[in-house]
Image (tube, rainbow, N blue to C red; front, side, top):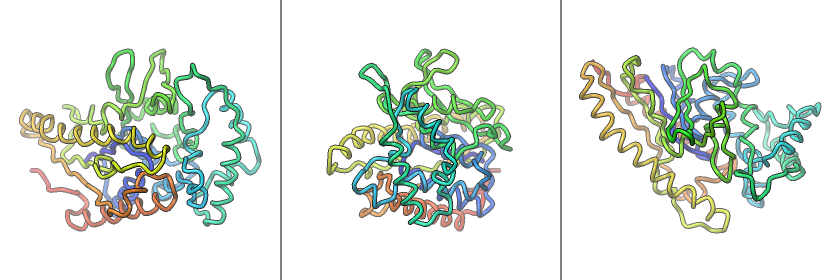
Length: 342
């Protein structure tokens, strides 16, 4: 059974909430494939950092957010989108030497009061970070160094099953899939390279950009003759047209300018896979038919204007929605999540 995690950003906790419900119910996945934000969630599931259990790691995904009392005045995730350039990286490296650094950034189990103090300190760090980003830079941000507090990159290869992320090779103009033995922070950064936001990354002399912008579910490599996938579970967290909302301010307008094409690409990628590639595969391999299980998330209409906010309240309720959606699916279909193909 394979789990497919598509692109996503602040709504990524829909996926981690669902994955927690799967984990609690004893659902076992033989393969996990992720793209973009889904790739991040796949890795924190496969290889939690700082001695966290898998369940703690999934719950901790909420702490990628910014507390509402700050976010309503500064509607930017300054913890994930940090200043780029070597000077900025050097400054952040010095911060990690502070004796209280880990206590500030490790928010697992923090009360809201402590998280407020933590988020305020990280805001000060973000503001005071120097940068040499110029007109000639190709990206403003470093590749989410905070995620090293969530993912143990040195242990990914020890994950019992297989995990995939993808990146887009600019030189070859094709999507490259990395397995667990090839994934490290360098290849992970390559999977996040998004022009203007994250600078494109070089791996072995080749420039890469975000694979999720091209193959939004990273279906590549899953249906191969050496894989015995019978059930393919897709968490459809991003292909919801209702994410497209009239922006209330310039920052939301900028966000919507990226969301509009990505939502449509997600929807069409899944439709193309289901109605063309999967049918073609099953017709060619009648003894290895694959069942597609799509899990969609019914987001209440009054949540939609803030559904892509990085606020703690939004990410918490998305997590709970993902959790309850998966629990209902398990109650109906069991831990196989779909029918059994004989």
